[in-house]
Length: 218
Ligand SMILES: [Zn+2]
Image 1 (tube, rainbow, N blue to C red):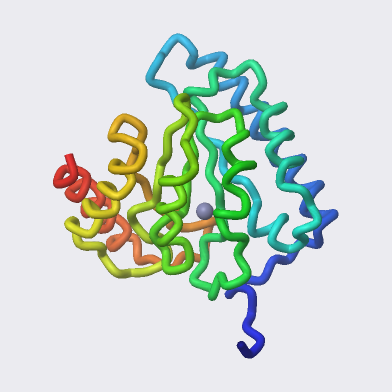
Image 2: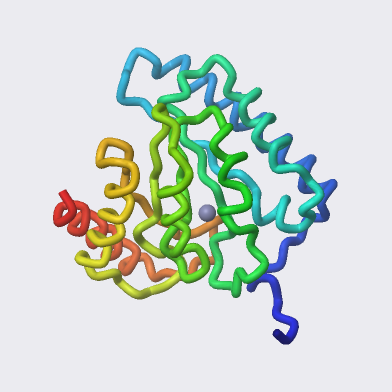
């Protein structure tokens, strides 16, 4: 294969800087988590998401950086919080790049499952990771955990057909059970303010398709 760019938006952080950034990011998130949970614990409907585990910015840049260290930092960060109400996003980078250098889920799933949050938010329908749901047939999802698989691709302006969304949801339900699947989007529709790939009106239409697909699958 001829040399391809790793991504449309190459990582701009060197690994040491990325580690430092991750630590800062985790620290900020933790402060918010504790504050929000402190305020919101009385409301059992409150769930918090940790966004994100920097597979793309950190571990893909240097496979020598142990993923277990990041998981350990995450676990330390949320220690004492109700894990069933915390979910974390595993991110390969929300961009329409080739992604051929992404770490494969099969190589990291065991480590990911040691994370404390009960919810595992996965990119699972884009062209590079859309096959990985099958791993959950062999990898037993611990009883206390659930998945939030992406069934809508956030990097394209295609509006997924609701039946396709339903098929994707059913794939997961068949593997781990309906009580442990929350249909989601692959990532966010814009990683930061400014650049965005998906036209906002189309993003809303994709979310409508997500809802319609979830109804079909129910
Ligand atoms: Zn992501």
